[in-house]
Length: 203
Figure 1 (cartoon, rainbow, N blue to C red):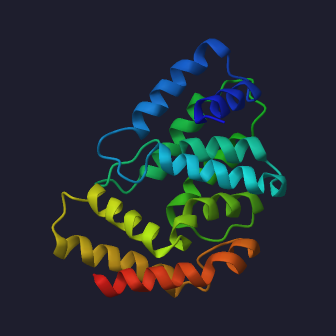
Figure 2 (tube, one colour):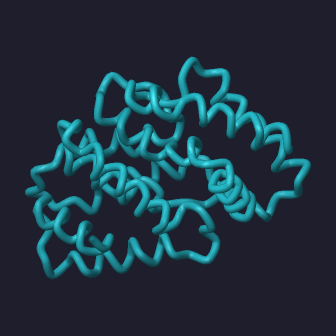
């Protein structure tokens, strides 16, 4: 099912007026289609939606997770450190006054994609894992991913980028787990660590 259709059906369920949904979609599509976005784009959203569809029966707050998924990278500038917080603010501001959604949960979900740390709220852990799934892809796909990230940070010279990237990757390895759900740990933890270490070795 096309992303726009999934998005539209979701917003109807959340109480948005149909006449406004197309406008919201066009804004979201434009943001994620920016020429500066080589990885954090509509393809990234599509892959996360596929994971959501696979595991949604495990979720208690399906609509909140899906809405947070769509908006978690709506604000994305590599020079900023508050992208997730600003994305969360925008996401909840757009919600209609009569929405059935848990607004605080949506805000917390999007903010949680900044640090990717274990949360006491189960559904937040699922969203984090959907976001990080790329780390456990095949080495070929992982190489495409880290080259796309480098493109997004092209304003920085190698000596700056490599230092920052290495620090971020090593942080993942220092944590007891990269993934926050038992299912993802069992399926993907080993592969993700292998990929991350191979990238570190190339920096």
